Amino acid sequence: MQSQADAFDAPLDGLNWTDWLSRMGGMIGDAGFVEPLGAAHAAVFRAKGPVLLVSFENHDRVEEDSPKAHPMGWPLVKALGWSHLSLLSNGDTWFRDGQVYGFFDRLIDDGFFDEFERVIFYGAGPCGYAAAAFSVAAPGARVLAIQPQATLDPRIAEWDDRYLAQRRVAFDDRYGYAPDMLDAAKDAVVLYDPEIELDAMHAALFTRPNVMKFRMRHLGPRLEISLDRMQIMLRILAQLSAGKLTRLNLARLYRARRTDPAYQFSLLKHTTRDERHLLTMRLARAVLAQRNAPPFRKALNRAESILMQDQAASEAV
Image 1: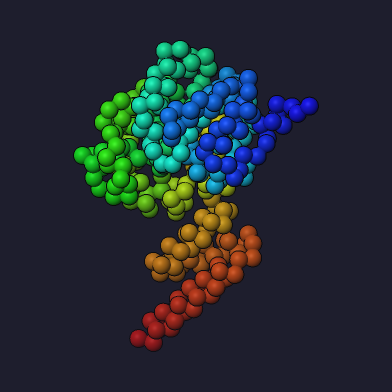
Image 2: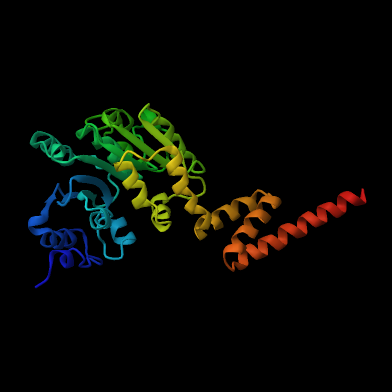
């Protein structure tokens, strides 16, 4: 007989939205619920421990990022014993849907969030917007929003031309302006790459006394993937839940980037583009001390050659 743990380990990859929800319903069984919220959204709840993670996820990204197409919170359920409520969208919708609003209204009326000792809201990008916006449903919750948009209302964010089609969507009604919705949160953390100018502009709108903004330069447009690859996402959420995610502790966790190949290549791209030859040499030597990396060896040789030529030219004058 298959155990519940084995059932939750079953793969869901390769399924379309409808089939994925159907299969998920069979997996959850009596351990929670799966509730469609109209054609483009659904809620999946898995009960376990006294801490609740509320994550917002895009089904396409779940399929792309998880080998088994499981919600990102499930490894936390297994590792930390948390309960998990996943709000999923079929595409990038920013969860601007009356049925999603109604679902959270029912959770509030039923006292759902009161059943847990701690509640954490999480999301990235459009889902980061939703995590911040809907966190107001659980006053005192903690929030981790990665590269969130504050709003796509053109009256406020007309400078963001990445999502022009969404300008027809109402961002000025219920659960609307994400920074204001964080006023009820115990605290919130906004992570972003300042090299992505529009993300940095949205992050600035989240300036609040209870919000810690933390820059993660050179990690690129899929910052959450970088954090997961560096194996610090779980630790960030665990420390946030425990109230220990200070700026200093986050900076310590972020040191993992120093041995992350993707981060190192991104940094090399910037130092060579900007012709910062001394910095390129320092970076290349540090990486080559860790592993054999021909691109960094090539960059080191080139930077050394340029500096030697510059020195020779200077001495000849």
